[in-house]
Length: 144
Image 1: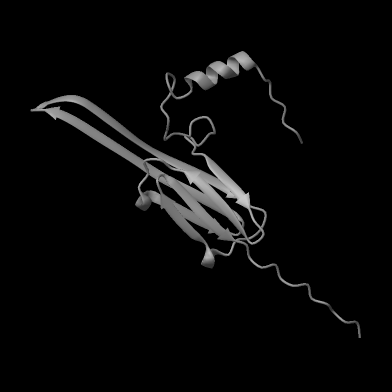
Image 2: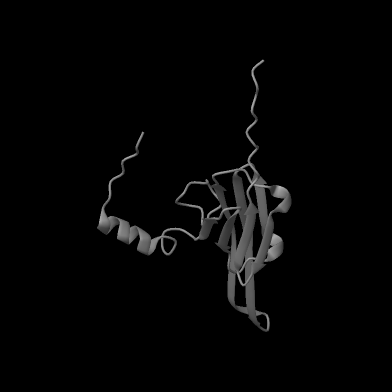
C-alpha cells in the first residue's frame, strides 16, 4: 500500500526554515517521532564483500558512540554533552549547554559478519566496514 501525502512547497519551506530554530530544540527527549528526534547524516555503500557506512557525528566523543549489529540491522547511537561556562568573578556572563541523543538504524540487504566488522572515528566522521556473511553453498541432494 502506498502512502499519499499532501505537498505544499510554501508550507514545507517555512517548516524547514524554522525547524529547530523557533518552535523546538534540535534534540527533544520526548517521543521518538520523526519530527522531534535529531538525526545525523549517513552514507551507506555496498561493495562486493562488504557494506561501508559513513556517519557525521560532529562534537561527539568516541566513548559516547554505541554500535549494535543484529543480522542485517545496524544501529548507531550517540550522546552529545556540551557545557561551557564563562565567568567573571562570581557572576556568570554566559552559559551554553546542550545535551542530546542521536540514533539511527539501518536494514542492509544481507547478514553482516559481526566478528570481522570494524569501526573508525576521526574528525567527527564514523566509518564502519561491515563484511557480508558468506552465503551458504547450495546443497545438492541425490535421489535414491
